[in-house]
Image (cartoon, rainbow, N blue to C red; front, side):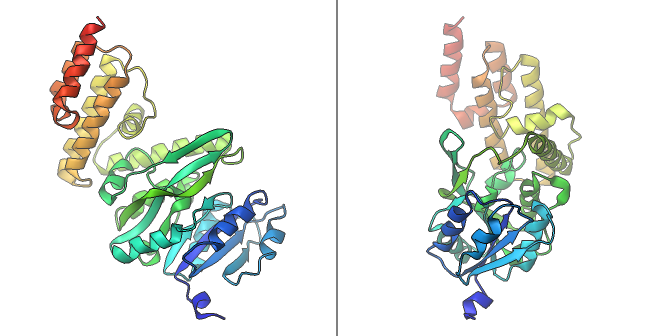
Length: 341
């Protein structure tokens, strides 16, 4: 056996369950990588379709076929893959996505040039499912990624490569079904540096089998639990609405017509985050203030019923908005409000 196969640089973990429809495209996109020092762990999780025959049709010696005796589910299968991995690095891949040819080459380069980085993702492009292609761009640097994890998952799961020595005994947690990746990144952000390559290096396929309604509900609930946990770590005793405010401060979710009283609560919540973090020092305080100020101004811009009272309250309570968004932009918004009266 080739020495590289015994001790590959990368172990690619690809769980497969009834994946016959797109499996060949996914496998081929890995085998055709410009960086070739890897093993591909194809873990068949009790498939009932032609998955096994497709896998066995390949003769590439880099493929390691693992067959679960019973259906273990995604999280247990992922953890099994991590435990079986012989590589210095672990790459994730889904059964229906397509990795660009230079994905591994570019991720390995990041790891080799940055010893402190333990998790490396990339931007990705959503396609299929009767939608136009959508580029998903996440923050690049570790402090920004960590900060935005307060509101949402800022690493594309199927794009991820991990430095095995950096994750230690950490594994995916079954208590966070459908949001296991989000939870994993939050925990890893406390022990290693994170990075996103600002380039789309994976095509993420959208189709009817991506997630059921039930799984979507579970993901929503568990994602909120992860956000709530991070707020508790800051020392914030929250209520349900404040978890939604947390999402609003870092994503476009829940952006709707904001009433004066609700904006007051959002600003108070944002100020509380900054105050608590100034003592706990969990997040970069300067980045936090800039991000929140920009988002609050954006939320205000999206409100349908703007008023001088509202903008005055916002600017008075968030004076840094003038610095982050610019006086000209703020004045222009005030003029527009007056012209529309």
